[in-house]
Length: 244
Image 1: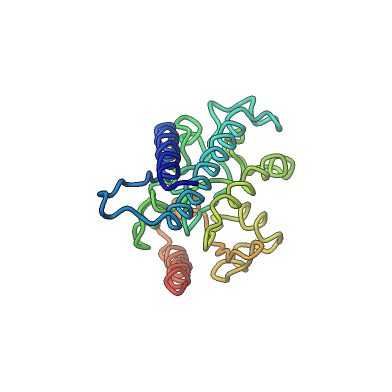
Image 2: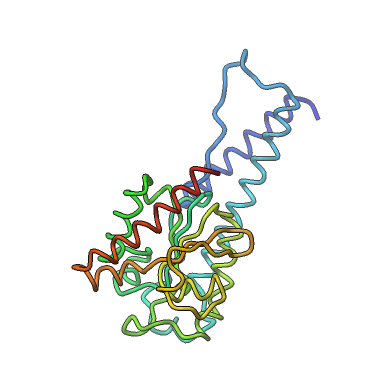
């Protein structure tokens, strides 16, 4: 393939990527044009072409996944939802947070962790040296259970393929499991949060740090010891990220 043809094909792919950015695939970054005297050799352009095609494929996969989540009727929870809550953030994040299920505020806005617990999670993320847009935030179950009850095992089973696909697409360096439902699912254990938190487990080859759900911290607002324990957990996560 001639170098001119490669450049034209890349420009077409860039236009498609820009289209997917407008759809909300914010993790896509278009190729910046360089002056003629800085053009890359054909061999490097071929490598860039493959990378761009991979990004386009991932954008299409995310679009299909989000659509499936929003249209899902695999369990009875769809009957009471205002809208499903797929998740949000950097789709190439090194750090991923997984909670249990959306609450009332999340159901209304279609975004994860936007209520009081979400505001606290945002503060935790910022204290770790990140912004919300740097990480990816989602839940095991994508629709709100009635009265914010704990998701039932059948609901977790029906919804879990969506989370598994999200983890596969993101391939984070570390996952933080927020609360017992997320920890049980990712680590396949029935141990209590007191036993689990503070110790890395494994989901496939990905380290998982179980910690208390922000809602638990909100309910125990005056308990400084719980806050201290969560912060100790997050310091271990930061240390692992810095070492990798």
